[in-house]
Length: 510
Ligand code: FAD
Image 1 (cartoon, rainbow, N blue to C red):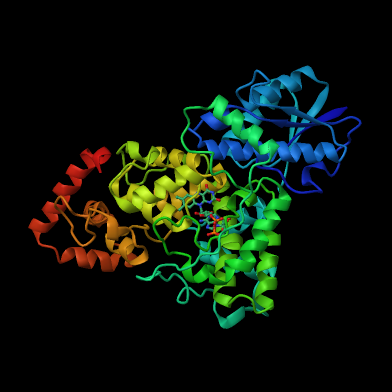
Image 2 (cartoon, helix red, strand yellow):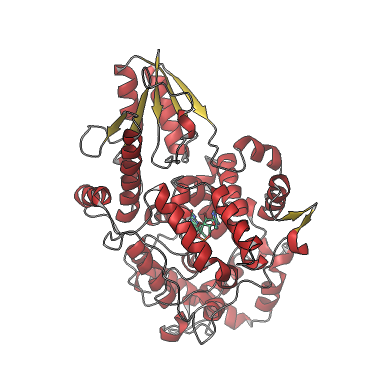
């Protein structure tokens, strides 16, 4: 009996594709589906939708070129808005014994495929995705019944068991991290001459994907005219080689720095290619280790970068599958303020927010500190409703897939689920002033806590501490900010609370 092999849009692994080890072209069918719902369940950025479609179409072309027939359902050429409906119809119509797939990257999608198979009375065979260096079973065993999960301990465990940057049982260089050497700001002189990242002009296949997105989702946010993302495995290899050569040596040092008008800085731009599985994280780690061994990059940069891939990326995936579906509705602070409209336009006078959001709409990209300490920090301290914020993040980034976006937003940035950080990532305007040049051309003053010129980050930061001071009082990592808050007079505290309330009621006018 034949089986239906489904490859999802973020499962575009290079050859040999891990799903197809026992695929029999004589009896089995290979299926890929472009489903409109994947662009509409959140209001997806046009570049994000275009990237998925372009990469899927390139992968299907490569399968065909290798002699593998693909049943490819193209957007607008089949009647199914939802992935699950398309699969169910095929299972009902064909003589299939089972649907075979790799683990999905989205709980909603996995559930819909369970439902489709159940409705069609067919088996669903889900295979582990070997892309990741930590299987879901291994993560479960590591996490056990811990209430608090810490990336640092997970990362050390990963380093040891994969023997990465280890000398015997000790970390190379005698330290697990080199944060003291990293995380600098550009100061007044700015970043200087930046190495431009490699970008890819859309070929005919990518142009067809962009045209289809413009046709089917004309009112969606974001632009496609800057589209230059890697859409094939060989392009992803070029992105990696370019990063290792030109930007990795400075990666650690400038990892947290921001600069107006410079969206990419020393970042790798590898997340979308990795999340679509165009490139394996082992390739990325090996290339980093080779560059380090050759003396091309300092240990602080090599370790800092590997920590992101081997540590954070694998950690959040484990957290996602362990905590779903409850993670999606987490809201420990009971924050209820609606997302301001300028999150979709970038039209705000606050320079840092405007800059991060406008580049997001242009490219579908912002680097980590912009996501965490600008938009994320603002959403946390202003008290925005976490679900609306998470839907925004899922919609606007080209690398956004549920397993990585949700824990980063709800766990890390918003601290709506408290199990993965030891304190909230909250900061005032002083942090943004130190790490960027945004405040120079901004009408808001980071040193002012209330009044019409006060930086909203500064007002909301203190207001956040005031509102939740009782909750934070038992947390030693919050002791210093609370001590500083304790120095304010009752009048000062009341004035911050009043100003925060006024701002919160008029967020659209910020
Ligand atoms: P670099 O700065 O060059 O980092 C290298 C790689 O490390 C990235 O490509 C990524 O694969 C990995 N990495 C670094 N930090 C993380 C992290 N916290 N979690 C997972 N992987 C990490 N990343 C996504 O891939 N998709 C998302 O939808 C996403 N949403 C985020 C939402 C919020 C609120 C925050 C704070 C972070 C989010 N991140 C997400 C993590 C991180 O911001 C991006 O991976 C990174 O900015 C991508 O750019 P880059 O490839 O140039 O990364």
